[in-house]
Length: 172
Ligand code: NI
Figure 1 (cartoon, helix red, strand yellow):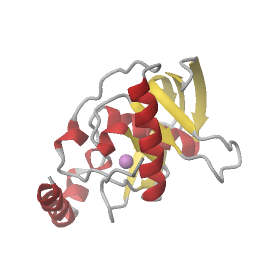
Figure 2: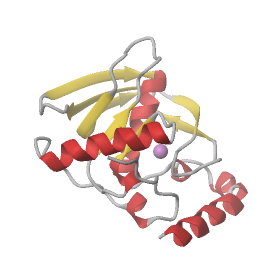
Figure 3: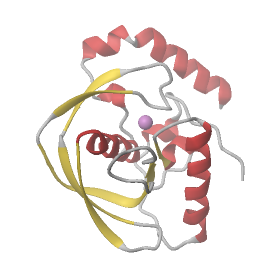
Figure 4: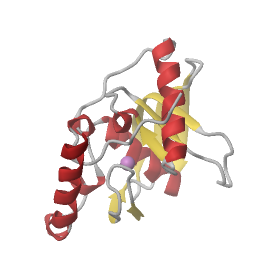
């Protein structure tokens, strides 16, 4: 299975609200392995299915090298059930190459999701992991980091964003 190109800002699939999936289907298992391949290929730390062109509620997070977890996270139909506190972190996104912005998010979240076996799981996350999870769940709702910054910051980035839009038009 070969890595699929990461969809770039301007591609309409990044703006779609992803649909719930059936965790048990073979399509979802294949989607997940394609997502890992694409994420590793692009050296990303997380990926939502929209980013490889599938508006489905599946996201993955690379947890290798983190102190509190060695297992990568596969989130099927994730849903934030509680959020509290506040943090601001610099974030980038594979779909917005060369753009780094400070994004304000909840510092702690609780979420429920299904894992690859279909088991219902809950997870409490803080700090970096909490922000990574919110970033990926945003993708599933068609929301990008540039939607979470001020209009002034967005104007500052408008040249770069226009270039990405042209790039995605050229590819598609
Ligand atoms: Ni992203």
